[in-house]
Length: 430
Image (cartoon, rainbow, N blue to C red; front, side):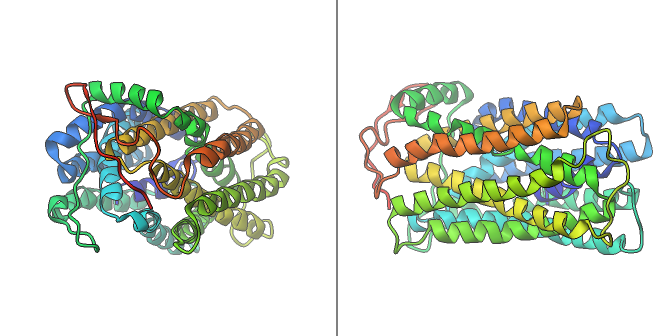
């Protein structure tokens, strides 16, 4: 009811507005502050605990959605939307740090792919229902922009979502299916986290090979949401597109999670199979999309496509496949990190690299969209970066994904708040 509704609104292109510039600038501000806030969020999570950190992180989503209601009422309030985006970036750093801790702490070794898939389903399911409501509500209307009632509905739901973390079971009292006790990892302070990132680079430099994949992991949203869905369709069509986009994400996360957790296959085979699926999907999506993208530019798009028009169906199916690729990419990236280590401290540092680079890439491309870089340039940059991410990841998978995590130096990156490095016992993987 926070990130899910944010995705529901953002996925409309321009946050449901006629013009997308304010939304693009707000997203640039969001991801810029997110990239910085991620370094401080671990310290806050250590002090407050996961539940309270989730509560504070959720408040930014309510503020962000409320800002779109404000700009709908007062068209000159675009600055408020951008400021709300910057604040949301800070709050998102809190929420995703707490969420990442729980997602990695709850599963047993054999359940990592499934738990990541479950997370994606939870994130997507409410978005799907909200889009169904929006679509049915607008079935007899050719909306050009989202109305106040829709924004108010979103705002009420996100405000309810702010309170939900306090109803969660205490993670420290959770018992896994195998009888072991859940222990949520203690995040390093921001100083020791920066130090820990350097230690991780020094002891496990192969993580650098994943940096392009991390950088690309939110890069494609700009073209999908603003430059395809936002550029070509009416609000009614955008809403239906996003309904099927999030539905397809459920299928994408479950299917790739099922493949990556197949115990009858070797872990190396699963890693290469997941990589091959992503490579295939990247080319399917972008070859298909190229034939549409070459037909319009920022200056030529004027008449929006509605759901009853012949050009709509093929483009809707493309958007479905985009949703599949998104869920598969994110799930596989997390799984590869989990396959490289079982050390919670090192995994926290991997996640720090992931979120920081992801946010940096997103901030840059959203700003590029805000200053009207041609659609084709953004599309090609997205395609090239995704392919580059996979090419760079392949040798890392070959070298680092083994049948069990027993490489030399595993478990040596436990960074305590004083900034010292504690040695730990080696942990065997699956």
